[in-house]
Length: 279
Image: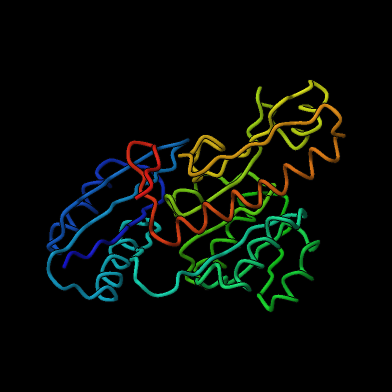
């Protein structure tokens, strides 16, 4: 039986840091299956996927690597997929439909995994969380790095496996994204032509867009350019008002996001060479 462990390493870049952690895996009898690394403005991020053919104590492994991380002054986390329920964090701002659609799916038994916490950039959707009896944490810091310091603590406290951006209107930094490789799912309009920003539907309406699409994808440091999971679209009726287009688009966003989340939770997705393959 093969055991696969994912290791993320984040900290200040310096020479030799890759070898430190790959050698650690080899010393523990592991084999490196994947390794990705990035450096942006002196910040180093690496994801190692190590496999072990012999029985390994995950807690002991984590304890040992944390000792090494402290010595090397790096922030390290270990992730091991199990057959038990995954723990989900939903990130929101003020649009309720994606959040409500996922919560409804959980209530109706379409999602078997556990929604552990909802994190908001403001308090607008707190009542929805209260009705669902899910902890709601508001992180309203305007400085995103300060906000993410708090959010990282929240995700660690709840031992989060998957983060879902349910119309979360903030840009996550590499310092956060690198800690959850292929474990953050986002949704956004993918209109033809592309209209960036919060006013995408208004711009599309003004230009007479004939087709509206939405895209769910994994989040990388390149904003909305991560590996695509699922896409859908609808034709625009010439008589549709802007509000009707927005309403149809937001419903499709919620449905498409839910489909992507379900596929991930059912372990049906695999990322290879920046493409998502459905098993």
